[in-house]
Image (cartoon, rainbow over all chains, first blue to last red; front, side):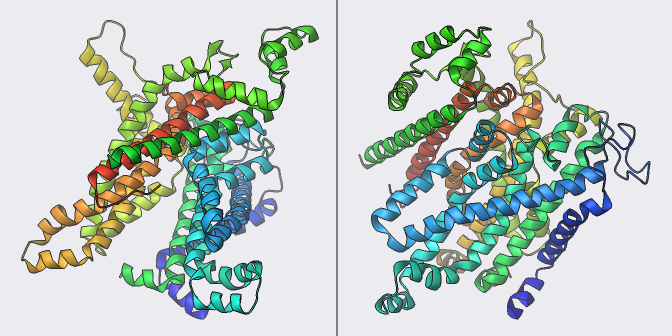
Length: 279
Length: 325
């Protein structure tokens, strides 16, 4: 752990990314303390420019709602959807990949054809269709993002498990009479955690992007303030009120960028071989 | 001969995938809110139960699920994607009407992103670890993290609203008596912002891939041989390393086709570009599920075709590699 941290720390960009991610998490948690009023409530006159009134530092939107408050509450939605949908995608992708990689043969063929199918289907279009059909809600959005997100996990885990399958410790476990399930979960999976962690951090980033795109198109949960929704609602007034689309967009950009940097840092810290390549 | 065999097996697989998509599509239509017959009756203003029942029989909605599925697949085989009751037009006609604009946009974005991406990636790799490399990789990382719809909106804000350089909306605005040249120029001017915005995300992907691929190839033994032969670094990089490094980038470009469709939805929505992405958005807003799923099937089929094409190109360009399955 200590060695890992010292390797991670060597990547300044990754550390900066981590700081930003923690900051966004802090804002998300603290949102109700800073802004006890609902972000949907009108607090000032509409179209108040930013930096004009210290109570609403980032101005107000078309309905006089506080942009800063919207951003703070939007952070909660982005992080929530990003992490939960990634966990669901892992829950689907890891078992499929592990079974395919461990058993090989027909099992592998069937599971991989299934995975390839989901990789061929245009993912964003599928997400749109799923959310539209099942009606926009927190639940349908998370499921849709997970459905388009799991195939890379399955492929990664399959490859890693396949490589581990040949190792002697697996043969030893088989000879010791352990069941397939025990070997997969207790012996093999702990050895392939690192690449999964790296992929997961990048998946949270792309889930946040996907969620904001869906909300932008009007497919967000109608009762939740999100960054994508804010930009979508401000789209028609971009000429009159630039700040309504600029601030939420910067919020998405910074969060996604930070998560990507953390992911890269993790990749290099967890796999010392790749850091040598980088030098 | 082998290529023909490969093509046939690839086609068979593609057809299976499209078939699976059609089945998925059918299941989704059934899960859509509202019984299709009552939706249709509602559209035509009638709420009479007998009329609804009549519609049900007419469209085979009273048949068992599997029969309906069979009918649906048979319809798709005959290129009948159903009827958009909102627009009072067959779905296929609506899609075909919009397809050229999307092909123009995605094609332009593809060429732009691949060219700029490969050039920038190669440039970064040649200056590995130096400031230029840092700048290029950082900029591409930023574009990679930027939501496409937001980039599109900012492009409109900066280049149309503030600077007034380029038109922000639509495909053309020249009137009827313009010459062919004027029309082409007009469309080209309208194409710049959407194509560049859509392309920038993929540019970022290609920069990273090209850079990684170049660095990988530069480490191989044949490069050492070239260096020992006394060739200049420039020639080695350009004529030998780049040529070998570009190949995997081009194949992976095929994999990006599915993402391109999603990107087209966002870009076309912001730029009011009259393509199938915009059509999908319109279907979404009007809750026109037949149309929404029709666009989905067509775009998925397009991706399958494009994947087959890139596999084929890859095979022809690099005979060393057996693209299995």
